[in-house]
Amino acid sequence: MKLSGSGGSAASLILRVVFFVVLLSLAVVHVKLVFRGLSSSHGMEHASLAREVARGNGLQSKVLKPAAIRLNQKKTDARGTLADASLNTYHSPLYPLLLGAVFRGVEADNFDKWRMGTNEYIYELDRVVTTFSIICFFLAIGVVYLLLSRIFDGKIAGATAILMMLCELFWDMSMSGLPQMLMLLLFSSACYFAYRAFEATYEGRITIVHALLAAIFFSLLCLTHWLAVWIALGYAIAAAIFIRPRGVAGLIALIILAGSLVYPILQNLKGTGNVGGVALLVIYEGLAGSEEYAMRSLGEIGLNLRDLLIQLIRSTIAQTEDLYSYFGAIAAAPIFFISLFHSFKRPAIASFRWAILIMWISASLGMAFFGLKENELDPNQLHLLFAPLMAGYGLAMLSVLWARLDLPATVPFLTSAHLMIVILVSSTPFLLRLPKDALDILSGTKSEQPNYPPYAPSILDEKLADFIGPNEIVASDQPWAVAWYADRTALWLPLRLSELEEIENMAESEETPIVAVLTSPISSGTRPLVESSRYYNDYLSLMLDGWAAVATRTANPRIVSNQDRKLKRFFSRYPHQEILSFRTSPLILYTSRRPGT
Image (cartoon, rainbow, N blue to C red; front, side):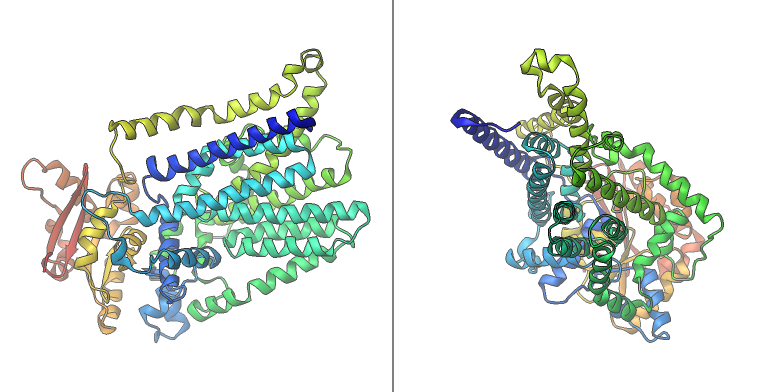
């Protein structure tokens, strides 16, 4: 329903002003009050890559993955160095490149300028990262509003914008450090131009310009997250079916996508000898249940592809169990699937929903193939990209059903009641939690807290950055945190002690020695002990040291790993230990020289 007259225009203006005030207020609350630092390991590694970009070093990672070392050694006939293996072949390049430009503007390339002060627990550059994500989120809301206004009307577009603004998952993603908010902006922009091409098709106008722009944005989406290739392939199929001339738009999408991937593929071939780079090993998450196991192994790991089809079907169907959470608990989004059975009068609207469905099915297959944990903040979570558009169709479907009731006709006040109910149901948990958290911090009831366990930025900044030299390496179970908060090269702790020794020899010969091993609650406190024994079998007693230190904290904190005969050679190389206590559980640093020297 469109508002007319000066009264309607004034009311519309007031509503928009209120919306933007609330949106900006929520941004300030999240960045300044409830923010606990980056929560994602991928987000920290992206930020570390961006800082190297700002320094002019290109996409060189300070996170050394044993799998990357193995692939590089195999490709170079064992002539490659650890520096060669640090070439990024895991993360898509666009997000760290854009974030690197932001970092250059705020002089984030100067690590000393952003060092943490006394009693500071949140790294200020984390706020810069999340501010960039929130700006992308704001722009995405604007694009979705424009698109849904074009598809339906301003009322449905406005309700969807409010649902996005009050969606807790979108804010959590913004604070994680993951590129999903940039992806949301690119995906929404791609869908905007795709819909324009659908409109042009049914109106007999030229479609090539909008189809071309849609293909470009889908390609940019793929350069932000490799898994989005599945979405782009879904679009190519839909474009070939629905956009005239049939097949041409789909072919254009595939050509542009292939062209955009040429340089990353060349980089992957240079670093690892295969087109997918280290990122190809993410397949172990989907088909073997553990990407970490593959990434931390210096040796070859087999992959059992027996019953592949059954496993893919099972994984795809399993996603539906948590689909409501993946959609950010936006109540209208699942109603999209009901709208598939409704006959929309305008053919562009009717056809475009099938395009959304094709892209979503393709993305779901990709997530099943490469893995999606039961966690809304999983790096491979692509469902949330579809939530706003699906919510728009869901609200349109509800509006059709609501209009058929006698109640809205007899009580005009209830004309938009269904939209208010959906907004209320979707946002109530978020609206109840957020003010309490903010008020607790403002009143001093709660102090500023980092994401500990397992991340303690102040400890890494204070202890590691000064102890570890620029040309030295620390091995750790949280190398991304070391790389980001301490600005030091970090090796992801290999699966086996023998592999650690092999990499130590490489590092020593290259005059970049490994001088310390850092363990944290990632291996000793945030996962069950049975699971820790699987991933850290050779180091299990090291992982128990944190608990031993906590148990004896009333006296002199002690460790138990020095009684493990299996670690005799390890302690000959790292004879000194320092317990880095933070809050209730410690991090333990094993060093080759006495800490503080």
